[in-house]
Image 1 (cartoon, helix red, strand yellow):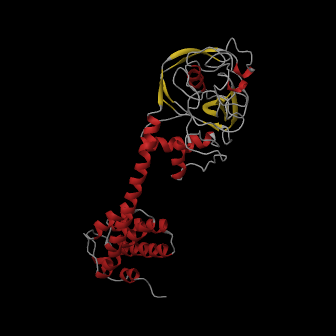
Image 2: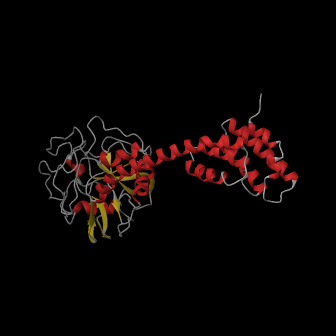
Image 3: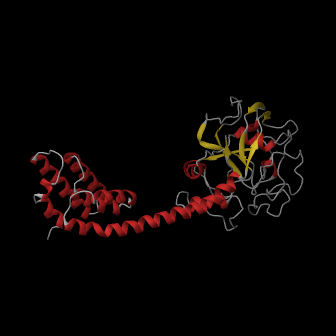
Length: 368
């Protein structure tokens, strides 16, 4: 089989005479062998291996001579490293080369410019999509004032479970919380970006409904890191104590509006709304609490950062996440459209495994 032009060049005096550094002939032969092997790796589409060989040749030669540059340009182009290709092209035209090399490289001037233009267009498209998302989230963050409250079963609440005990005082620093559950409009861009798993909406529609079928792991390993990188800000899940403090909004009753469930105050299996026991409701379908937060009762269970513990004995009193106990299971709060009014009480708790995705699990964001 006829060898590529580069193989011929490596066997000519060019490789030995076009170097500004003092390199022994023995080392030049060794460098030539690395480049020759890199050419074979390139032809076999082992691009990372090709770059390793070129790096070794460059270390020996002390510089990127033209044969190294030609092959590195081609290799990095195949790896879609277009910015680096651009720098290498600039370098290539400052070193001595042959007409054959120039002929080999010239098409990459045009091809790489096209790729850079496409990348810039994609960046602008992402930026265009990013702006309304960022604005939507930032404009929906509510400042929760600092304060102190009694966490756990309300004194007048006869429906408490043992896991809502013991009632204990917690001091809360001011923080911010998203006024609604995270909606599909806020989550879908992460799916479109190829970062978040393709959650499904159970056929109920997306838009302003809360995102569902998202696990704790999906949120903390994919969505929140993506959102933080996108915005340059730091979002997180609320602690369980922060969640209950924000849900109570100064109240001491079973629900933020009183001890009686009333009718059409929330979306649960028997709350008197048109979505009861059927599906999620669009966010802001019910009145907000005194802090301006919507759907802290019902609609979807909301993941918090805390490990699951069967009661509050030993829980922190400073509002921080309780990260002792079973870290494979996390706390959810708020109740959902699927279960009855007892589960949407302000102190009601639930736990589940970090990988579980269900049609009545969602979340909301917090920020320091």
